[in-house]
Length: 143
Image 1 (cartoon, rainbow, N blue to C red):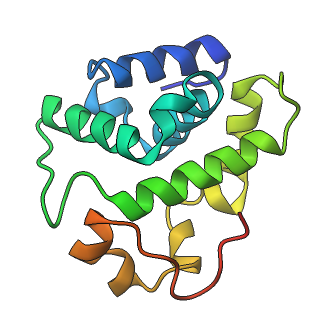
Image 2 (image 1 turned 90 degrees about the vertical axis):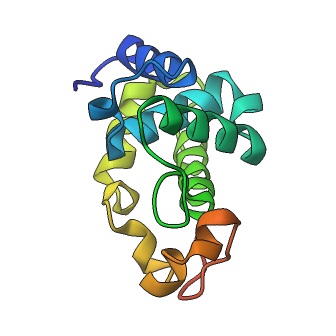
């Protein structure tokens, strides 16, 4: 998947919203691309309850169960949306999203394990954190 221009990011986000995005494109980068697009173009869908609905519907459409151990994870989702929003705000309002995405992916938050700087593994991957927001228990998030 190449997310090197804003039209590819928009395409990914719209296919995610419509639950037509192939599961293979729902990568770490794909998650952040969709989050950035939603924050900029559809902030109504970036709200906690709305993003939960979008992801659980997408998961169901791609055969991913939403259970205590897999599928939708509320704490990870909200932390990632905060990271995306923070990176979006750190750029000019009209900055191309592919440039914002590239900067985000090059930052510490672009690492797949970035959340472990703020949460202990047992806390983050608990069923309780999957169901509802759990504040970081290791370090405060900078945003």
